[in-house]
Length: 163
Image (cartoon, rainbow, N blue to C red; front, side):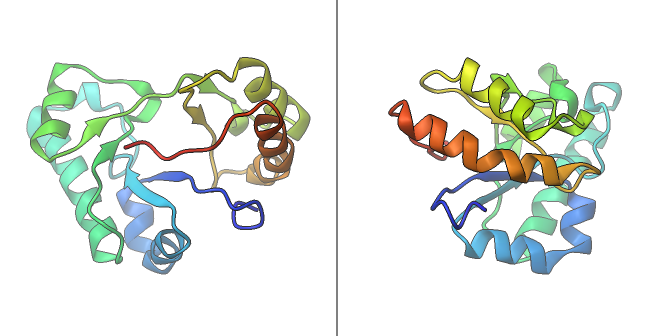
């Protein structure tokens, strides 16, 4: 769907999934999308020691790079849960922590029209939209994309990758 609409996105992947599907990581990167870090197995990182956080992030970055994508420079903490320890470990590994401004709650099984409405009613310059793939109801997210893309473009927005 992204290819059909000439849109690039950022895919924040878990290391365990990147290691299990290096072919998919390569395909995402080959299509011009960014593949970034989302921890090894999606824990609450604020419950872990600094060494455990570093292991989560370092192993994920290695799995992404081993799959053939560039080494991640961005990190999205699972659940948005972060603290000084998590942020310091991300920085030490050369990554900037990224959060979202619009949560579509698509992982909860929302309908495509609900997902699209959430984005289109809250979109503003610089917004970061949180969407999921690889979850039980990903098809609804994919079906919402054309409406979101057309709606944003009709309002003069463009999709851009973070720098």
